[in-house]
Length: 355
Length: 273
Ligand SMILES: Nc1ncnc2c1ncn2[C@@H]1O[C@H](COP(=O)(O)OP(=O)(O)OP(=O)(O)O)[C@@H](O)[C@H]1O
Ligand SMILES: [Mg+2]
Image (cartoon, rainbow over all chains, first blue to last red; front, top):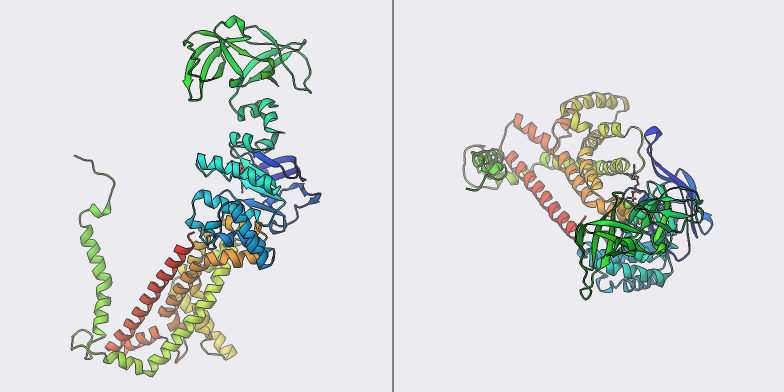
């Protein structure tokens, strides 16, 4: 429903120009919770601001329900933003802030009052309607900013790292709240974050960005289980990379010599070449007998992390490998440092990447 | 023993003495001037008993009355004009698209701060003399024009400071919420700019009220303002009447500054930026 078509954003002129978005294309569906995820400076805010109308791309199109909105100024786009710093109007009360958009749209007073009340109830801020933003906590300001952006019932809501200023507990609460608001209102949310866990738990689909391009778009499960390239695998979750050799028969030779059969990506050719395997630490187990497992390594370090323990091993080719094991005091295990251990995993746990 | 922490001017030898000296030098003459405005006699330095006679004299002096009205009229018009120009200039420079000659404009606005006042005064004298003989008009317009011009930087600076300190995302948020450019200005930019505008207007008013050099050169015969009247008195016979007028001016500006302080503090409490 919102269609970003090869947009190009450049800052500066001439040879010193910086390309912030390089022909980015993405289609976001109606009522979708869509997340832009990527490291700092990759162009997430730039993409969001292009949709809101504060940045003018030098090429491409942004279509909302089929109509190109690039030529419209921000105040004519049916899109609202929850700003990273909330940007609440300090000289207005909470209610005036929430009603601002409707007032600018020229709605009748009674309708504004009713909608403001409804929105404040939605974000549970009714009791604070007559306060000023400076008299609110960070989380409360966040809710008001959300209510203000939702009040005009936009087609699309843009949220720029809206939760990053909150402490962990409040953040978890707001994540659930945002999800609830999104499903209750049916508004398309485009959410920016650089927190991969937040992206995985909240999104219908995620676009992983890096250096002005989109690297992969997919559901959280697709992105996590089937990263298409090293950058994505590395950015989302903890990952082991294992250098291996693919044979023409479709089997993979691991460091240490063992061969396994691993699923290739559909479009990948079966030909002999070096590949990189992606194996998630929590999808592996340690074996006391190294010969029983496809991989083996020497235990170098054990890190206790509360819910689980991380075992750091060194593989036959000198690479590091981490195995994560859930702690269970009822079934304690002891592995000695310096011991050679087997690393077991199912073939499905292995993703094959080129190079 | 604990180590000396950071460098602290207050701990340097002689700090208190120097501070006291500065304070005395700055305020003692003012206090003395105010005291002698209540002197019963003619002398400026010899106390001859308490009396309000000089205030009464000044109050009934028609020349003083006329000069006061003239001063206030000039200052009021100059304040309005210069503040208006300052706000527009600050907006053009702080918002809107960047344009060629932005720094030239800055130099233009701040001309009165950079060029010695006496130079401006002399050049205005020459130009206005020529204009006066050409078009024949010799009213208060010249003084108002000159005051409006040299008051602009004083009105400009607080407005610009306020604008620079203002979070631009507030204006973007307003635009995002369907406010047109004019509505953004009226509903968000201007209300938040208001304390700066008030401060600028006040500075402009006081600057105009206080001006001697340019006024002295630009004024036609019989166009004395309060300060140039006082200067004239000094050439003739200085009486405690001048002290009385100066004291009233002093009280007036103190009241203005204090009033502004309270107004802006209240604003600040309500709308913390
Ligand atoms: N006005 C500008 N002028 C020049 N370069 C800019 C401008 N705005 C952004 N950039 C550059 O464009 C790149 C993308 O910026 P953007 O703000 O979109 O990053 P981001 O992905 O939102 O990062 P973060 O997670 O830190 O918010 C950055 O390298 C930034 O330095
Ligand atoms: Mg950003």
